[in-house]
Image (cartoon, rainbow, N blue to C red; front, top):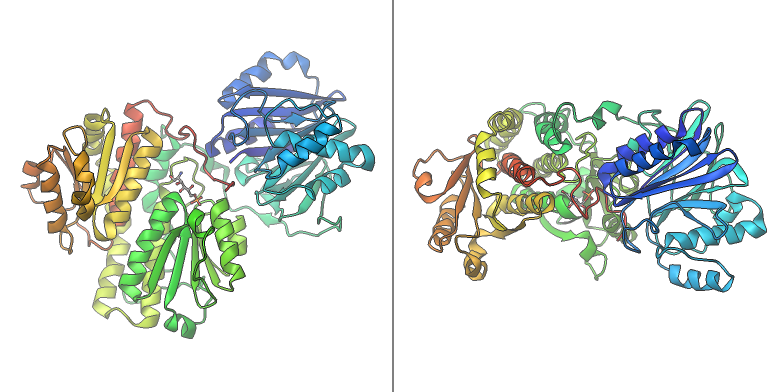
Length: 615
Ligand code: AGP
């Protein structure tokens, strides 16, 4: 949620920290700050709002700086204490010698604060983070060693944290520690970095070391020392990042979201590559590390995820049940973790996450692992914490996704579910050969069909303009596209702040129909050739009879639709079961253009963060 970057080395420290924070900007934030070691002092700069404000502040005060040699930077997404200057990071101890930035939530901060107040500490903010600053300073007073002080302090913390600490008396040393929040160290020549996520450092180096829970890193210009919570030194594997810095540029698009929507055909080609060769060959999914004989008998799957990933999971349920006849439960991770589940060693548990860092899903996965279930993770970040918990890992290879609203990662997750469902069906022998061939044929043709949609966005733009002033929307569908309706509504909500609900079309008459009138547009996803088309059409007629404005998203060529619907958005002809991989695209574009017309901050919608690393 918050973003952290720390740097010690030869480069211009302010630029490195600023670039790092800019590349983490997509995660969402409400304030930003830096602490710089300069001329024997630690100097702090903080501003509210966008990073540009911090840039301007640093520019205006640049005469104060001589030659900074190290520093830590932070973008904050408020949890404890409102977004304000005083609550912005870095925080300091009472005397100001120790500075800290933090991502996470300290659950026992009130108790710790009471103790520290009694010891005479002066608190200035409402944050849980400031407690850690005082705690480390208190430990430092007796330990006289920053690493030991951090180690002794984190032993007292309950909750989640990734912290970076600097001290005026310990020049050009950054001590980092983590538990339940991501943190990595990145290695350079005569310079080293510490950060909460890889985009912060990708411009400078690809060599990274991922810290695990309870590990502590001491970072200087020419050395990185990593120890466990007891102080034993650990030799960690250096990993080489697969990303290129170009992934972080908009490449001519106005927003990352639009660029990422347009990347979807190639993303799908990537996901299919090496797994689906031709319509006659079986799907190759070596990533699933379960014995085929066990898979044949598998009869219970649980999928856990949040937000957009949860919607992909719902499609996954439909596909696995339809293709392989295995019963699948889907649950929001935040619900799964607070109830007695039936998960056991014979359950396959699938965790789905773009970021691989979503705290609720990580907790859910850990709970499933504790029940000895095989855990399969579908994620866009094979370098994430969740990926490291996996027994089987399907990386979706969508490339880095910057826009807060997930688009290409959703498509990649969907396609991964198609492959998994077909793979299971092939092992279990539940589908006939001709049907399998037709599905594979449709999958292979998908990228070019999506390209067709992307090359004709005018009808979607026109529709967006026509409906951008409406305050409420209902998205309806049935069957395989119901989850697409949920996802379309979520996209609209999160980037345009319009109230939008996804609803099973057949449920409309059981309540929501009461809300329908000319102020409540109904968008229906209806794909002919399957079992739901006529039914959804009848549901639309019911809505029309209540004066609702109607939008159709369809592959039908039926010209009569124009007499029922106010707007008809057409997509290429497609088999209903494969259609969610296409229908999601116009809905992403519709949300995008409506948000654009309304002048919203498309890539960084208010109150949201790209990866939600707190429960
Ligand atoms: C997607 O547009 C949202 N911003 C959000 O719902 C997201 O999908 C959710 O927070 C889950 O994130 P994850 O996929 O990284 O776990």
